[in-house]
Image (cartoon, rainbow, N blue to C red; front, top):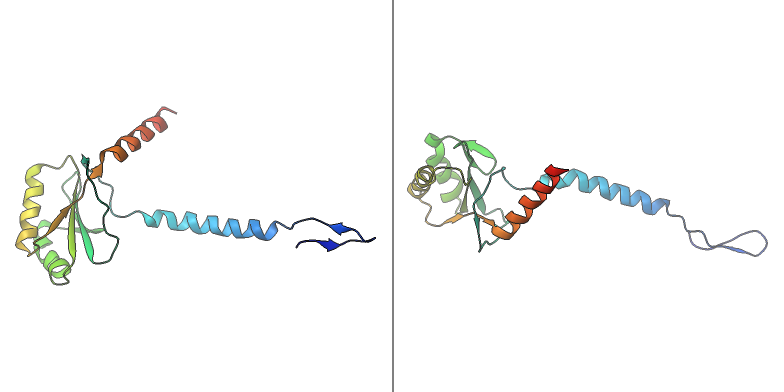
Amino acid sequence: MGMQTGGKGRYLADVNVTPFVDVMLVLLIIFMVTAPMMTQGLEVDLPQTRAVSVLPKESDSLVMTIKADGSLYLDKYQVEYADLEGQIKRLVTDQKKQLFLRADQSVAYGTVVKVMGIIKAAGVDKLGVVAEDEKTAKAAAAAVGAAKKK
């Protein structure tokens, strides 16, 4: 790599790009494999609001998700209503973790209140509620609409 002397006292100014291309292809493959793993949680159509803060990435928090069909998930694992209080006591209260609630916007208000009551009965005093930023939601909806038209 670099300048080498050729035959009759001349320099060759060729750059060997093969190692560079090899490294870039390996990085591309690593990115393609790990990118799907970077998304957190389940697919839920969150309600939008103006003031939204980012969920903490630390391992000292869990996310309770209520999907549109009413099924409950604690992080990525499905939980039944009967087992919910015990699971929250064991995984959140006993380990002193934070709990955040994500609910699809089509879930009935009564279902959300019922789940919040179970969470309160399990001993969780502070509950974060997850929403989606209005600006981000509108931009994503516009991108999806444009992709569907093509």
